[in-house]
Image (cartoon, rainbow, N blue to C red; front, side, top):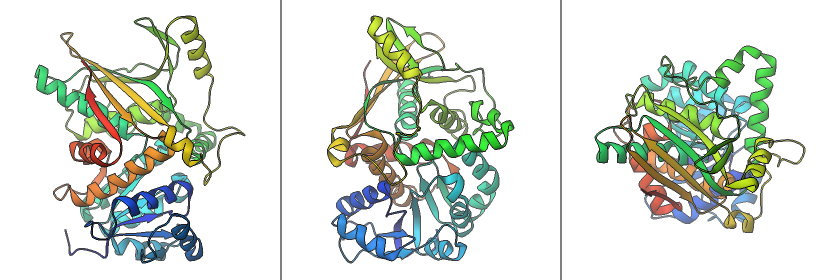
Length: 389
C-alpha cells in the first residue's frame, strides 16, 4: 500500500443513530495511544460537534464535513483515510458515490448494507476499479451478515479439521433473539421493494440465492418461506435470510468454493415445540420489517434496551456421509444497534490493521477477514463462536 494516510478510519454518518453508537464505541475502544487513528464525518459540522459532546467523545477528535451529494467532498474525505466506515443509508439512495470514490482512490470501505439489488450493482460496476486501485470494499458488516457469514465459515473450518471435508448441508437457525431492527434496516427494505416495484424484473435477483455469486449458480436451495417442524421444534421464515444466504453463498464463491460447489444453506427462526411453538411460528411468519410503527432512520431503542438485547444463532452442518457438527454464535447486545455498531467498528479496524496482503475487490466479511475478524469480535465486541457438538 502507499504511504499511510492521516486516519485509519473515518466514521461517515456519525450524526445518525447508529453512527453515534459507532463513534462512541471507537472513542472507548480506540482512544488516543491505542494505535488506531480515527475521525468523525457528516454533512453538518455543528451536528458533529453536538454528537461529539453528547457521546462524551474527546474534543480533539477531528470532524470532517462531507455530503453524499458532493463528489468533491467525498473525494476529499476518502483521500484522508485508510478506510471509510459508512452508516449513511439507504445505500440505494446515498451509497454509490462513496463506493465509487473509494474504488477509484484505493481506500478501504465497510458498510451495513443488506440491500441485495444495490450490492449486486456495486459488484458489477465497481469491482474492476477496486481491484485496480487496491481498495477492499466490504458490504454487510453488521448484524446482516457477520454472525451468519462468519458462523458458517467457522463451522466449515471446524468440519474440515474434524472430518477432512466441509459440510455439504448447513441449516442456520436463529435460536433466540431480543432487540429491534434499526430504522435504517426498515428504510433499506423499503428502498429495495420500491426498486422492485419500479422494475419487476429485479425480483429475480431478490429471489435467486446466488444473485451475489456473479457467474456461479449452485444447486437448488430450500425456499425458507414456510413454517416447518424439525425434530419436534417449529421453525419459521427468518426475516434476515434473504440477504444472509446470498452473502454466505458469495463467501463460498470468493473462497474458491471451500464449502463445496454442491453446498446447500438456509436460515430460519426456531420458535419452540408443541402448539405454542407452532402458534409462535405462524405469528413470526406474518411479521414484516417496516410499517407505520417501524423506527425511522435516526431513531432507535434506549440504552437500557440495547444493553438488554442479545442473539443466539445455531448452525447445524452435515457432511455427505452423515457426520454432523453444531456451532453457536452469540452476541451480548441487541442485534440492530448495540452489537451492529461494535461489529462494524471492528470490521473497519480489522481491514486496515490485520489484512495487509488482501488484494483489492468487493468482498463479504468472511472472504475478506475471516478468522482475523472473529478474533477481534470475541476479544472486543461481545461475540462468541463455539462448537456445541
